[in-house]
Length: 150
Image 1 (cartoon, one colour):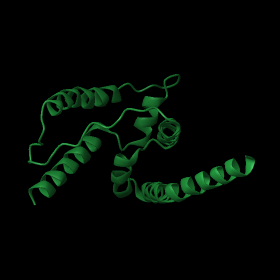
Image 2 (image 1 turned 90 degrees about the vertical axis):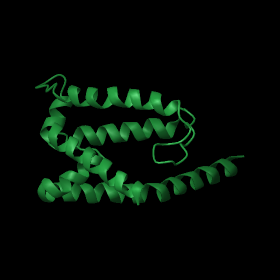
Image 3 (image 1 turned 60 degrees about the horizontal axis):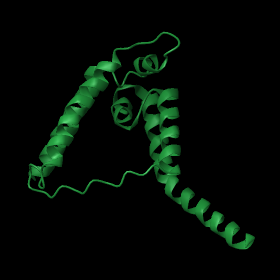
Image 4 (image 1 turned 180 degrees about the vertical axis):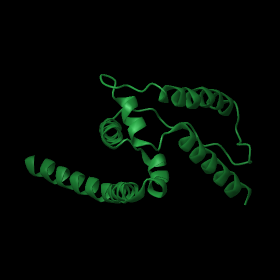
């Protein structure tokens, strides 16, 4: 129960931060990305407001074995730069740049930006659901092509 409460509190705080910072305003986000046009640098403060506390939090977490609520902290993941990470980053960045939303703000936009936000959220969820089976199909065809080429 305590874990659920703090998860909800964290989500509410994150959502409030997105709202106050303007991250759910697609025009503001696209203005941040329009470096060669009508650039809006205000989201740099949002980025700094996220990076600085997380830098401190990661340092504190690295020195701990147990989380504040008593759960074991997961091991640090292996840092590998592979094709999935690169292509996923490219697609995420392209979608963010074209639409001006990423997953967190998309949830808020679905409720605050009318039908456009709802359509984007549904398309994003559909892509998340469709990606694993598509990747399995691509891998299976790749293995078939590889074994028949031998």
